[in-house]
Length: 613
Image 1 (cartoon, rainbow, N blue to C red):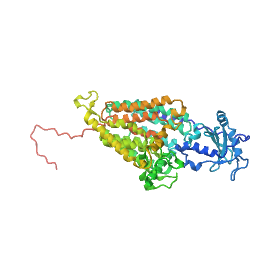
Image 2 (tube, rainbow, N blue to C red):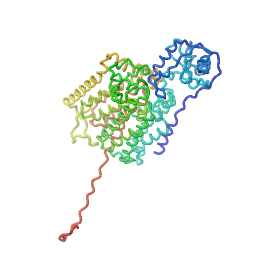
Image 3 (tube, rainbow, N blue to C red):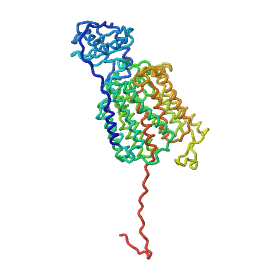
């Protein structure tokens, strides 16, 4: 097993390095200068960048380039002229190649703050930016050069700390991976399937390492094998439910020590968030939406230009940020945003509490502590926290729905809240609606191989009443949660700004968007995800939380496999569910019988009165 851990560390280190910057080329005659109107084209190209953020976490509009007309005279305060930087960029082989693909393309020079130049190349009609070069004004050195999707998607360039800050550093990420794996290693069973399950969860780090180095053609395909494996495992566990391992879960570290580890790691995570993290556009959007709700303004269609598409989420997302915006305020700019930091920290604490309560309900406090520890030590949950995104909120609401599994109305409430935060959890509605639909047989009818009551035919009256109650609670909650949005926006506007935008935007962060030409296969995967969600809702199953958690995780993963834009922040959506299914299948630790003092041997002689003193 030590060799296995070493292999994981080596795998995380083998990410490819970023493309080296090209050396400054000899200056040649300047190409045709782009007209000043090209500034509008730059703005259009940066619209798609609203899904990204620079390492500073500041608004992209604050770094908007300023067009400079063709001239051999440097602008005030600059050493290079527009013609000089156009000549430098035009001599780069990468730019020559992309311009050959677009006959009639032209370039323009732009000032960048503080002392950089940007050269952008556009297609003949000026609608598409096909190449971009960043040049240092003082030395004339080429700092960056981008083509393809990395022109529009700055998040695909591998800027250090753009997502998660220093959590991506190997001196933080690798120890977290070891801490996550260590308590669950069973040296007596080195080939335990649980070891493989946990290694697969950690193996997503390899894909992230490629992403952090701007190697999207490696990061995207390497994310899918772990997701497919986890989908298969969750489907298997959704059918077995409690019929997993008969042996108890063996922890390498005692539960009390894990509890101390939970406390320490929570403190570490909060401290890192306060001192190091940045707020990406997702968290910024939550604060903007909260402010608009408080001010009684339209929630959709009128976000600031530095986050134009921040209104792509459900209304519950913005409502969840209202308390934090009211406490910490907002100065109207994409600054430090303490409200977003506070929201992310609270969402994380709620996730820890809910997963502990679920584990305690299923197998007692030991499982609850183990699950809480898994959450705080898993690096991808810290990645979401350090990005101050809203993705942990999705996990919180789904976990709350599971915790309320015995109550159909409560399940309906939390299903509506989760679905109106980010729309993917709506795929869980059929599954949550039919939970408990099948009555369990009496113990004498149980499966003798598992001693678990087997599911039997539908309780028609009671079962249908539960479904109706769930749907009623779901609809009422959805209606109430939508009041701030519907008070100012039409359903058409909300649909166009949310579901339609997400469905139609292109993204290189999935195999569908990266390679193209796979539309038919993508639709097939999406249809299979819908079929899976409905099938799991209708199949007979036991009423235990383990099977429900596994089925929910399977549906979420299947949904993620078919979307155009997939990102590592989505891992927490299913992580807690997967861990509950993986660890909950073990039996509860057996309690040792109390030691009873043995009675003294009785003598055959008449007993003598003896004083005990």
